Image (cartoon, rainbow over all chains, first blue to last red; front, side, top):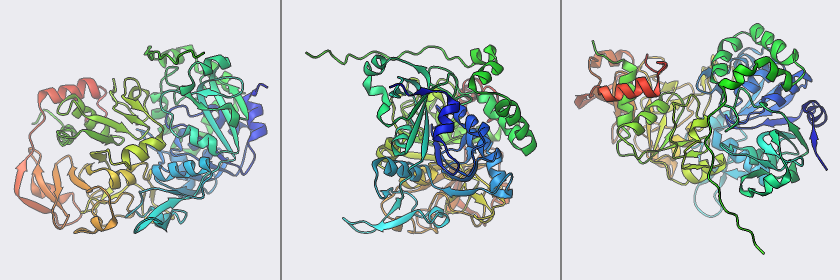
Length: 304
Length: 254
């Protein structure tokens, strides 16, 4: 049975107030379209998890969707601060925000443990750092096979993970190429999974190249077809990262009123991503169109 | 007047530190341009590793972020972050980790987390990202930072990424980790670490800079090497590659 639905329905049915939500994707394939729909539907008290909150969580936190943030790098990558997150942490605007902080490897360990249903995960990091004293969930256990202690982190099991992909079939079997980040771990760790795809393809397209299948439909609850849904992040081979937007976000996000006006215009004022794509205009998308660099082909062999 | 900026001197001096390196783990910002310059000049065999999951990047443009699509196209390998951190970094394959910081102390400990108390900070900084584990698990660590008293402080507000901790053998007592920071490359000179005390020592001054001017920007009485040298200025070729290829908009020039 097809799981294809609209973003509006997927978010309405699968994301609930108070949920732990991971919209993953490391710089690449960050599903802004899902974040914007969560803002539009006024979800509240979410626990947002991501290695790099990026602009999407800056926007969601400014919109008042979250009560807590679990993260490992709180910046506008290559630009500077995430000002809305900072305002929430430093001044409680628009609402106080609890934070739970790891290093990348620590949070990677949490997603692995969540996906593998392990009670904890050992990582050889944190020694000599103040991070464990800032976050009591980073703990040490005795090495059962040798001397000394090893740092461990607890599993992270989101209620909902949203994964943006280049292409998926209607059951959610999904191909990703380029950076795969923590998408697989975040999806396998989640109770419910939404796959958002640039293209919906036949199952045969997925089966023709099974090494590229990062998410199996087995764990997917909803599939949404949403071209350009990762903008201003990017989809390898489809559109470039919109560096200009990341730079422009800095002045917008420094002021809560300016940011709210941006949300009114680009999120609340639109009905969905199709509107957003149209509002951006063809010229903007042309500028983000990369040249071609096709992969070679491999022969999987036909066996009788 | 020199025909290059202090920042350009800092980036070139950083790139030169990578002469014999094979595999470098590249951080965001200044380390990024320094490593890309090294690959195009002094270390053509250098393999650039990015925490986003890239081994052996050959970027066609200077990536603004460490997850830029140009890092993927033409790379040797793209892996999930779980593999990058576990097999490449924790597995001991990284020769040099290259880091920046908001605060650094005399033992090369780094703060990128908060200014002020952790709960109720004056300034909330980005946090660790991969820096904490890079600082621990790379065989050696290079640090790039502009000299000023806000950055080079007597005492960190928060230790995000451990350097030589409290000096002497305090780092080696942590366990089986890399040897920690070996150099701090700044816009006025290069600092290295005393082999015994592990305290930072001014080892080389960039042309036109003085010991007094450096001390002025450091928040503790700075040790100076007996054999203090002068840093070689950038070559025209290095400046051209930086200005024309890597940073045509001049983002890193000042």
